[in-house]
Image (cartoon, rainbow, N blue to C red; front, side, top):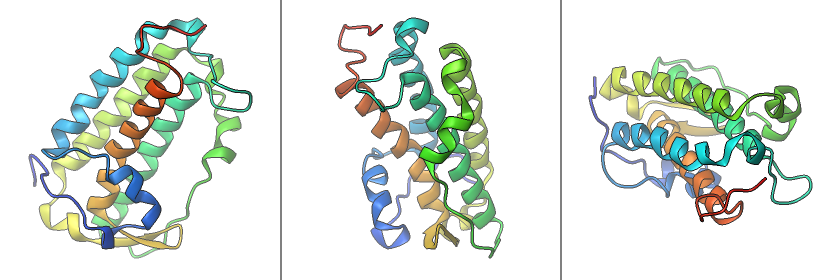
Length: 182
């Protein structure tokens, strides 16, 4: 069982559209990268406060609360895919439509702290999965949303996806630039 994961998948290990996330994963131990992201996300967003958490940068765009909820949903999906494929499950798994899921989640009815706590708990669960995964399982593959993907790619997608949204929150939402939206 790996206490750390230093490997990265090749582009042949995942569908092309995941490259934008997997390419954002820095070199080093995935367990450490994923652990650090918990504090990074919390320190970025806790100063926003409850009023600011309802901010969306344009009409029809997600609020900060919805972004955090989406991160948690996506983390769960990729952790499940990694689990299923690592255990040799040959059943193709469905895709998920993030935009179809969002209205049912009602993230804007929840507090920012609650959403951050849920993300933290979900990420800690993902970390336990990664730390306890047999090393040979990282190369196993499965089909999700009609495309082949490796377990390692599913795992790398999690911190890459979070990094993508942290960058988006900073650049597009203006979070962490000394400005708190309300």
